[in-house]
Figure 1 (cartoon, rainbow, N blue to C red):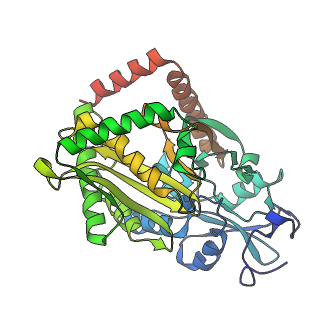
Figure 2 (spheres, helix red, strand yellow; figure 1 turned 180 degrees about the horizontal axis):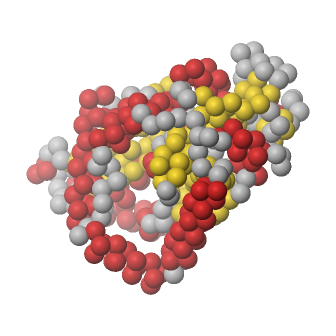
Figure 3 (cartoon, one colour; figure 1 turned 120 degrees about the vertical axis):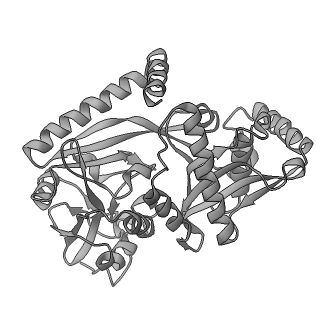
Length: 392
């Protein structure tokens, strides 16, 4: 069995290495720095989510400083998986969750491609976390991601109420649009372009200088604060730790890959310098995820600048080695209009203690309740209205 220092992980993808059963040694590491070399070796696999990547997790840890219980699995001296989790109080107990779980659109853990979970996997994880957590709750996991089954699918699960939406990027932008209502989308684009030109024109900002990128992120926070306030909803980006985390993610780049990059529509003319729409995207290998987006409701709203920004981002990614644009979690009309692929997500719910068993039952009940409400349009709209009233 080769050591992680000798060659990249994941030899099982092409059949070179035999599958590794989950009967391996698992230890707990309470800091990320000692694992960096092994971590970066595992994250080279394109199908391991960037949300479990070292830079993404490091930015969160620096900002939040929560207790860590990172599970490392080794077989024959080789690290075959890392589950980067932190311990948070929830449901009346200690919950082990993916680092930055509240701001992750897809989670896979970090596994070598030749790792196969067997029936003992759940009990091994229980033993490893005993005394540290009451419940292992790993959320937003696709059971099969791009034709590979996730080893976490062997654990107790409940289907998450949220789905994710993706647009495959084909050889040309025209071929990509052909998956959608291409005629209608081109007509929309022409109308949006004319309306923006009537206001004096625009610049499409795609990445750029660090200081401008950080300024755009702050502008996003302001837009979201105003939008949530208008809707009577709590601002999920309000706390300083989350803002520090995302600013930290902006500075993490490795070649074409990046943890976060800001894109925007910046107006000219009468609104010169104003940001009509802004979005933050991440890239790993050929997979781009839109982490968040916002528009300024007070300017150029009639031009649908958010839709226009997605056109610019998606068209601009062609010819750059990207084959999947991911709109992330959450059922919204603009995502369905762009994304022909819908991916179910699941949550691992693995109790460690009796208290964790109760917390797990609560999570399952809440998740199934939310899924029931979301599947019924009238009930979902009523729940949204009720939430807004309760937040005022």
